[in-house]
Length: 312
Ligand code: ZN
Image (cartoon, rainbow, N blue to C red; front, side, top):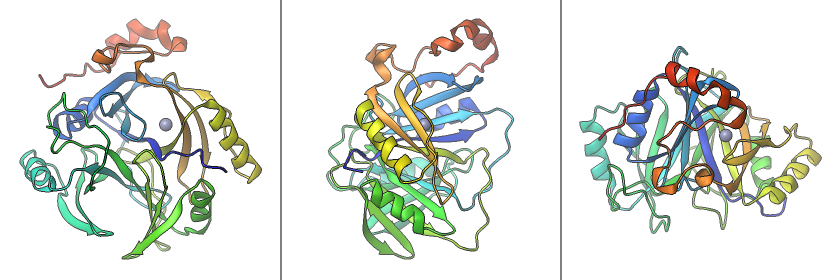
């Protein structure tokens, strides 16, 4: 593979309650909801996207809120923690804010010399904010957090694996290099990426496999610039023996998926066309957007999906 991967594109997780999820990512974390659509394969369930102003690749956290699912069981073969980048000196603000809002599991730590704050989202899903020096990415400041503190996008994600060997080889194949090892965590990094450049691997040979449910990451997506690069990456993965889906049109990007040897589902998503393809940039995420194949369900969906109440 020859340098097409640009870092993370998005991270997609499961939750139970659409309103609690929306409130947490907009009112607590200060992200912008950049799309309100449905799960293309299960259109009775929302697909909510949160990110920076434009929903730039490398900033986008997405959720499927299934109202009746039970919590996942954390384990191996899945993402352990999703990590956001925040400005240096902002963690005191975040600690006070998260504690004041009753967020669970708020705890400071340090990893690879970076000050961090770990916490749980509403379904127990694990996140960390890491203070990153001079992250050039512009934050969304039209929401509830000012620019001196606002999230810049992902720093990356950590994977919990029983055996990391094949996944490490895969990451190197995708352009990552082994940057450091500390406290049993191996850090892989991508040079020249979009800022969401880090994958940490924690090897836990005795931990049972995770069970998917609310609070679990469903998959992580890596960014490529365009469809030509995606096809080149797909061919390289197939040639290396991976079982990769055909290209799937997700309206806001094109996607391919494959299950990694360590059990984590990876996606490769294009940076084009982006979230402004079907609504004005000033109003991203406000109206219910449906893919054309589900447009005929609109009136049923509008009366059956829970109404999402945004903070004023
Ligand atoms: Zn995805």
